[in-house]
Image (cartoon, rainbow, N blue to C red; front, side, top):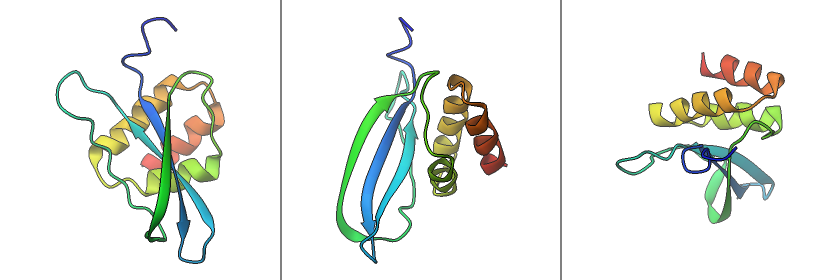
Length: 107
């Protein structure tokens, strides 16, 4: 995958607790642009303003996530840039089940 590192979307996993204290994970894809800042916006379902953490990793063909988490995450997208980033993620991953989940949720 030489050469993809600088242009591949990054997947940010945001971990937070909802109002009941249950841990939630939301995936937020961020596409790095040549000019201007990346701007992915999401709603954090159940977030009540407490602590949260985030970790980031490049997306590649072998990237995989839980389908339910992907579905929830796409549904939390608040702008076209975030939905477009999910489309770019879909093109890079090889997991057919995730392809279907992303396609269905983006309709």
